[in-house]
Length: 107
Image 1 (tube, rainbow, N blue to C red):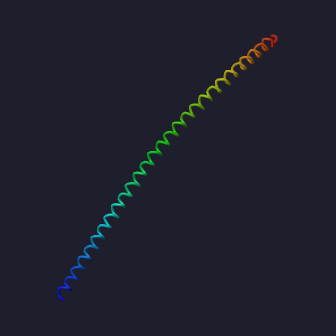
Image 2 (cartoon, rainbow, N blue to C red):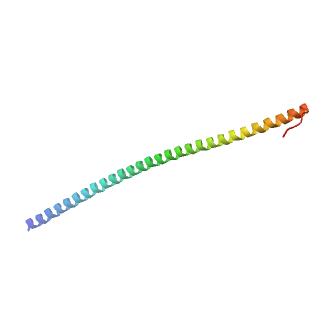
Image 3 (cartoon, rainbow, N blue to C red):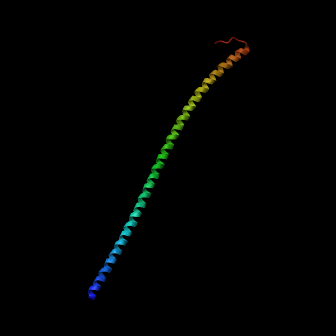
């Protein structure tokens, strides 16, 4: 009878040890899964940051091109207007000069 009780107690001890081992193994699996998840999340964040930086750089480059295009167009318009006004000023000065000299205005 004593042997049967010892056998039962021994089996209960072995069962508790197996449960503890299973708990420890489950804990290690959970910790590894959490570490993997953190690593994957960090990788995704870094990839997202990299892609965002590329998009920003591309947008800045396009904005700079558009700015240069607009400045060039504005400079052309300004030059055209200046040339037109110079011609008008020259004609006006000539008319005024002729008027001061009392000559007939030809036009």
